[in-house]
Length: 113
Length: 118
Image 1 (tube, rainbow over the protein chains, first blue to last red):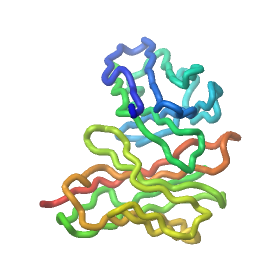
Image 2: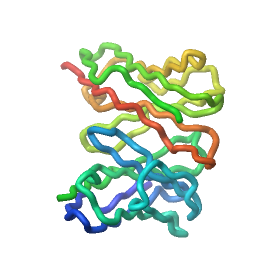
Image 3: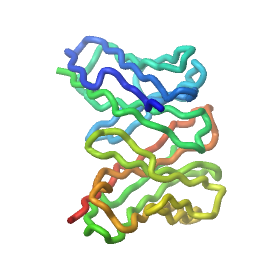
Image 4: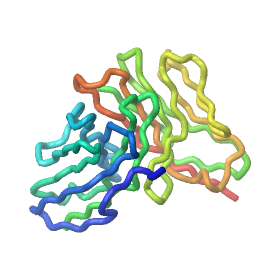
C-alpha cells in the first residue's frame, strides 16, 4: 500500500516567485492537511481539505492557498515568496475521522533565496 | 486556542533502558485526540500512539505506552527497552474532536530530541 507521496522533495525558488507543491494521499483517504515546519516556529497547521472542501485554515496570510481534487490529491500554492517561507512542508492524509490519526508524507523542502 | 508544551528539548537514555517524554496541553474542550509522532532524520512523521480523551484507559503499542491524566492535562510517553532505532524527534500533538468551525488541525508541541546511547 503506497504511502503519502509529496513532490517535489526539494525546491529552490527566488523571492517573489510562486510555487506549487503536490500531495497524493493514501488510497481511500479523503482528508488532506498541510503543515509548515521551521526551526523557529515548529510545526504549524496551514489548512485541511475533505472531499474537495477546505474544512479548516490556520493563521497564514492569503499568499498560502490550496485545493483538493476529486481523486483526493491536493496542491498547495504559495505566491510572492518571501525568505521566511523557507521551510519543510508536510502533507498528511486520513480517512477523515480524526480518531485514526494522520499519515504523513516525507515533505517538500522549500528554500527561498 | 489550544497549546501543547513539551518541556524537555532533549533527552538521552541508554539502550535497553526506559525513558519518559513529557507533554502537557491546554484546552477548554472535553473531547479531543492526543498523539505522539516520531520524526527521524528521514523527515517523515510516524504515528507512534494515539489516545482518545473520553477513554480513561491508557493506550499501549508494544514498547510504547502513555500516561494520560485528563484532569492534569498531561500526556506522557514511555518507551521501554529503548532501541537505537528509537532515536528521533518526538512530537506531542492535539486534535479537537470538533471538525470545522475554526478547529486548527493538529497542534504540535516543539518536540523532544531523543538520543539513544549504545
